[in-house]
Image (cartoon, rainbow, N blue to C red):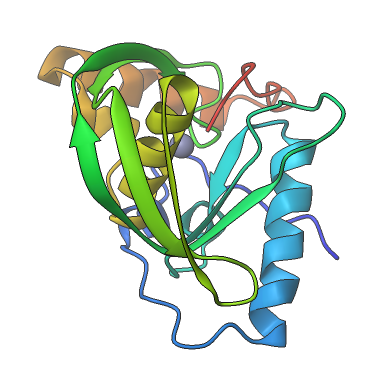
Length: 179
Ligand code: ZN
């Protein structure tokens, strides 16, 4: 297992959409372990493969944010098959340390995906689950937090991130609940 580097905006690889996983192999299992390790170390509650520069449609979630017992969920080739309502949630992103933005999302979603054994499953929920899934699905399409805010906010975030990336200080720890 190895800790992977989480790409930070404006790294161009974050804009690259993920490709479907053709077969859940041992290599994919190793990647899933690295992704979970990297997410917990950040710490975050979700991480998409595209955030570590792997352009595959995979993300991991653990909404317990470090509490015991943990609840790691793996989503391979996910699709949102149903959604309802609207909710505004203040989201943080591991690729935008220190930034939080109000984003509008569907309030409830049903997702279909493959688990770590390549078996299809469905899961539904609202609140943080629905928000986190939609945030990670965005990552798999190369869509970032900055693509969901006003032009003014986008410019401000862009400038703030350029400044953060240039500073010689240690990277800030992730915001609680970052995705
Ligand atoms: Zn994110």
